[in-house]
Length: 125
Image: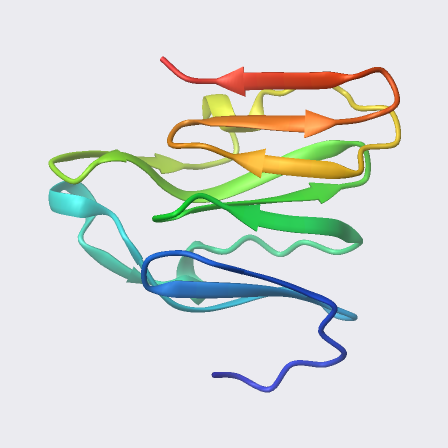
């Protein structure tokens, strides 16, 4: 486990963990990209995120954080023989602009967030 500077939130997946710290998001361990991508070190998948407010993940290999008024996700979704890499243009990162977001949940291939307007969900196939 790496040194963490002032951690205040944590999430864990199947073989990785991520923490919100004063310096931003820090992940360690490995994300499993299945047959398509193989196993990738968490620090190679995790984007540089500053000012993240909350972090969460699914039970396997996707992580998401609230950054300003949007949700930013990374990692992998799908089933082991057909995984998709969650990059900046992936459907999990195409959610709405949020108003004062304060809660975030990640499912198998979808995200839901709570803000001042209500609950918003997106992703899925």
